[in-house]
Image 1: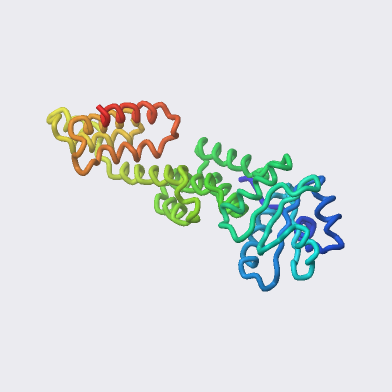
Image 2: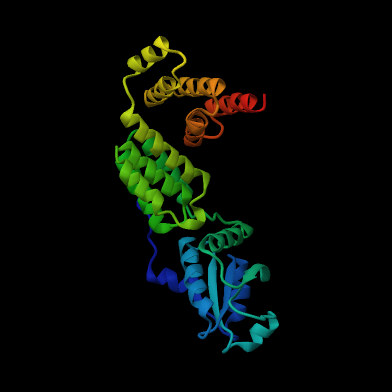
Length: 304
């Protein structure tokens, strides 16, 4: 398993500073020649500041030195606030090479704070992933090679560093699924923050769980195939065959069986064939040939 998170208290003191009018030039303007500096204008009486400040600090610390943060109390440093034309707080500006390059006013949700910090780091020529992309890739490789337990531990460690990492949530769920722990996989996805819960990777993981649960109940493939041969017009038998085919990793054949149901009766069982097709498509990668061909055939039937 890859170990993550090696920051220290000394690192924190160096990355997040209380700045005043006497130290602004050194700690913000001059310091921004090396890495971007995010300046948080706040005040003790400002309610939203108490939420935004810690969220910004967390993202700055997670960046491991790719960006720094300066905190300025506007009540104690009115001259700087006036020079920056601060009309309301919280107000945040990012400096690089001595110049403001980005900023916003008011509180933001965690996903937008994360995106802002990443944007600032990129503007300074840094890597906003702070090495987490490499860890995600390594964990995905572990999972692909069958080491689901270590993959799960690595994905969990990534989430401790970045609780907004969609790929880590999806990867952790897939790891549990690979270990036969569908309930745990679903619990992981149910714990995804609301503002990233509709991401395609999360939806794909949910689809994979749904297919895994179906596979547990799938009948013997030979029996399902024989039932269709005996009565080709039995659409339930065809649907059961599609489930069995997918459970046996014959996904392309499963898609063809579902397309045949849709061709014969698209409204059968409240459109179950189409719903199942979309579940399979969601579970696979968008560029998978099975998805591309299946979507093309389905579209041609819909618009015929």
